[in-house]
Image (cartoon, rainbow, N blue to C red; front, side, top):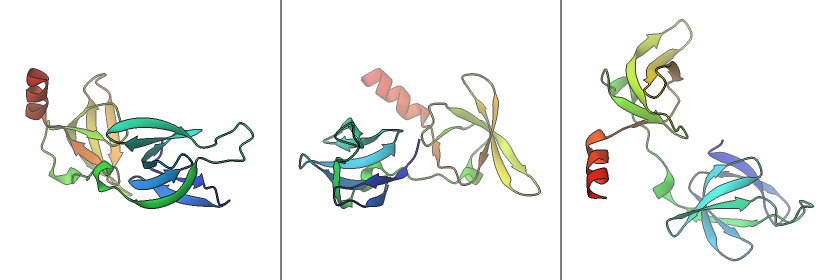
Length: 148
């Protein structure tokens, strides 16, 4: 859903948290914010992923988040320049489960779009240049599958 969101904190105010912010929760643990869902947020702690509810009770009066204590750069995905993609190269976008094959670049009157083909369904997709593009390293995936 979202890489940033306003979360309620125990001091009564809402703060904007972004991917990579380390949040201290009411149990005293520190969890890295990754993604916001509807009524919970996804966080990482000690290499494991956790679903953390926004509220501790059903009356929505006591939030889990206490304070933002730092920043963790390991969960932030570095974007790849889509204009450097080669024809046929595989890529994905952040928060997307699909893998796309680069088809080309469309230059329109208002915006430039990246065109890709979903390799699962064969449908064409147009992406804005502001998306976070992640190249797929096929040889690395083959090694991981064969050795793992």
